[in-house]
Amino acid sequence: MKINNSQGITLVEILAAVVIASILIITILVTFSNGNKLSNRQTEDNLQLVDTTYALKVITKDIRQHDASQIHLKNLTADTEKTCYKTLEIDQVDYSLTDANLVKGEEVLSKKIQEFKVCTKFNSVDSNMLEIMIESTNGKKEDTVIIIR
Picture 1 (cartoon, one colour):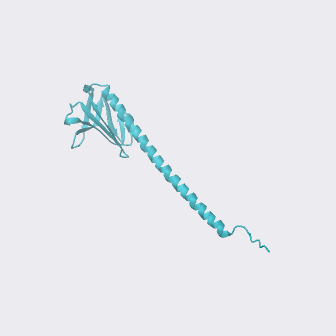
Picture 2: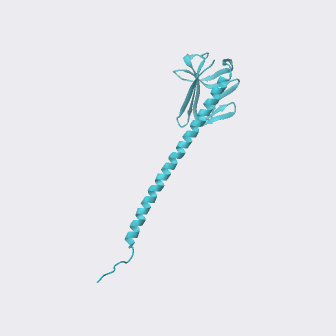
Picture 3: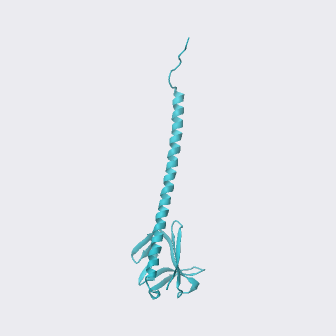
């Protein structure tokens, strides 16, 4: 004689399945959320780097298009290693840091800038080598050395 004992799924089995499914869903959502935050932060860092690099290229291009007599440095900073300035003037247009923005005259070249300085090599304003340094608020630094001919 055969006894058929199939009564379906018990409440304990349903609860176990719900708990396992909940753990999997929570794990997937947390992983997705963390990946999304990381992606957003990297995207913001990359956009800041592009913005800073663009500003540096604009300044470099302007310096190369003008004579040394049209390039002036203003607002000496307290840098012990080099002679550095906060403002670069090219053909009567100032490049300076204003309210965390690097500006060319009144035009904003780059936002979220922590430091902008132009240093002369060999501690001489008349030197033909300029080092331009831009540091963004996220700590990324861009710099270049330009030889004025």
